[in-house]
Image 1 (cartoon, rainbow, N blue to C red):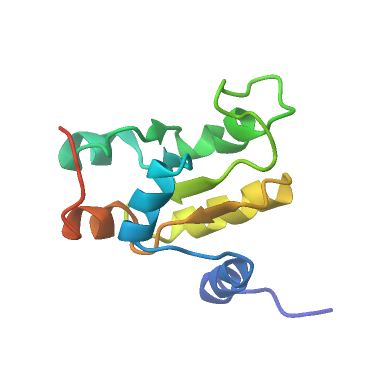
Image 2: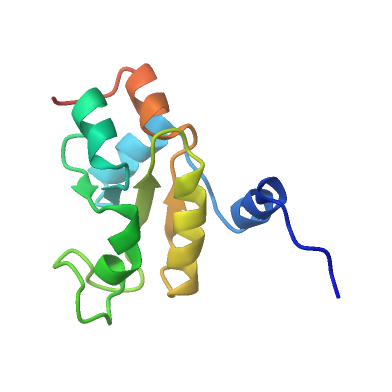
Length: 128
């Protein structure tokens, strides 16, 4: 029987299967048709603002809303080849969320290194 993983090792393993991107790359990906998905909880969105054009999907609904075959999918969940960039506050929960999307067959899903805070620090657009 193997030892249980700690969260740090689990996160490291999750990220091995992702091609994580930085804020400018995420901005450019959105311009090229990628779906930016903000999974931050409401209090953080209210405090820090929103990325214009990003789809807000609470973390606990992510798989239900983005599975192209799911009965509760959003209209934007058009197929398994959809490019998705998951954004959390600092780039930790988004890595685990992107891995979960991979497991649903959304192999082009990734996350934003540094999360929303990196986006904001890079001077990219934010609305209140």
